[in-house]
Length: 407
Image (cartoon, rainbow, N blue to C red):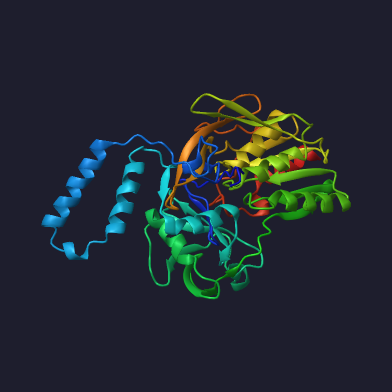
């Protein structure tokens, strides 16, 4: 098993790439994808020594016997479903929204979501708690959704004629996903009008970074998430911009809920001197480890980051690493503040548990969990902007200020 770390997020606003890349509630995951049976042992066939909870076992046994004896429809009991629900309930008793149990039949899909192997319609969407709506904030270029005409800011009203309360966001996401070649119908609201789209699910070629050359030879890069190979794509895009005469960069991380942390640290490595600290982490044994730049910088130019309240997880790692190492300034509003890490552990039966294992700190040793990162310069959008997900250039005071700082 590999020990790559993955940091994903979902926002109270939940962000998800409805291809199969689920980012779940502004969390950041460090997926040490390994079997729990071998943890702490060099013997791959060893069984993890777990102390039995006799009270729990006897309580569950009594409940099981009572249900079998008195439940009206006891001949229709789904034992597997009951067991899964019991385990999920036990884990949820921790009160940690980022720790969860994943049944065996869901693990394959869950792992594909982590690495970004996408089959779907190609949209990122937000469960916006403030409005109570599910909003599309980024249709992936050349995806079925983008080709069909779905736009940023569209509101999803139903999936295959089924409506969902905002708390069923994950269920909506699951129903939008599906097998390659199958179809899904979305009802969309756009500027007061209702539209219907029938989309065929397909493999998504993920190339999320959008670039542009602005005035004064300023290069602009929009990163909606940190997916597999984002750092490679970023390097290629910056090289292309340099070949076009770009002398400075704006990296737009607004509404970027995170993704694979290795991709974010690799991008930081492009700009930092060797051995500079990118982040550090501390586990429950108070053991500290540091992630440092492995190479000398390959890009040396002025940088401004644009951030907002939905900039989270891996995005915050890139922000703090460049900002505290004096490689970039930032403008916008305070970031979300997600600074804990989850590990995905594989159980002997093939199921898994995603459990909070570490907290991360900035290069200067600051915790950002539930605090966020203050930008170098706070710049708010004007009151005329109705949604932070849909901002036109004329009203984008944050982008304008970033350009001014680089002129």
